[in-house]
Image (cartoon, rainbow, N blue to C red; front, side):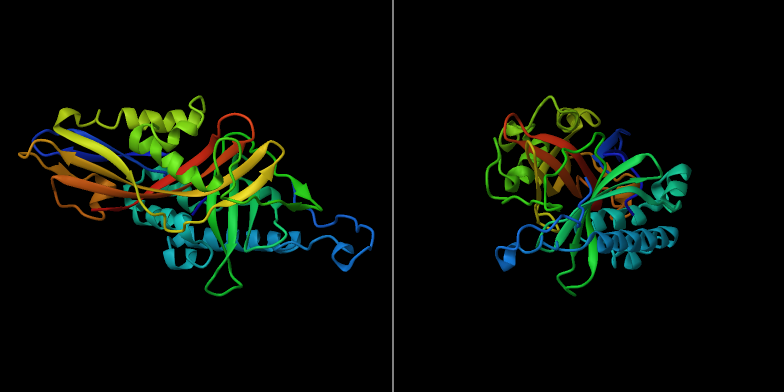
Length: 333
């Protein structure tokens, strides 16, 4: 359920008994052409360009199938149907949206069931592996960047594992013979390796970026948004409770990379927990609407679990920039 551009922050409405104060929680809620000319037939390996993990036509059909199934699943909020075309953090986020449907406004509920179409499509297809990337516009306005990965269980089914909505154009991936060029996730590009992106972004939440997060651009609007969340984490409940974020293991821990003319685009998973703990033993926290769906019992500590994804560009010169990030609360204990 990825066509709706969800907010990155949503108030849960949690309150302290006797205090009546609300608590805040995070939420979020180039075309890869295959027609390169043959080079000189010097050796068998040079006689034709690489075919790619899928052809352009196959990628189009995969996106068409996803669009059809996603629209059907959204209409009835069928998580089991959606599971046939989504996986990883993305599926966890979509499933949570279905579970939390009753807490949405009338407009949000209507938007969730409104059919969508992918237009203005582009594909970035690696020469080998088990995934490819796509860009498209939905409803003529929302620009989405996606990753599709072949299911390890069947070896045939393709499922979407990433859906992001960058507000500006991503750096265009470099193509060779019409195919995208992945980069080694463990190799440092400029100031950071792609494999370090998850820890860097999560550090902005956990410490305000005093550790791994120091390598990320602070002038970037997405980084500013996360740092604002960190700085204001205790404002809702004041001295009567404390809030902290700590990284957890993502459901699908895989880093996707695409080489660009100025560096590497890294698409990585995100996951953390938000712990809200009373500082006065005489108080308890009343869960908000979304939290209460998982556990409505008033308690001294509420721990919300979040899963998400991010796209970060790692330039060879300068600080890495967060192009987009998405989270959803998927559980509350």
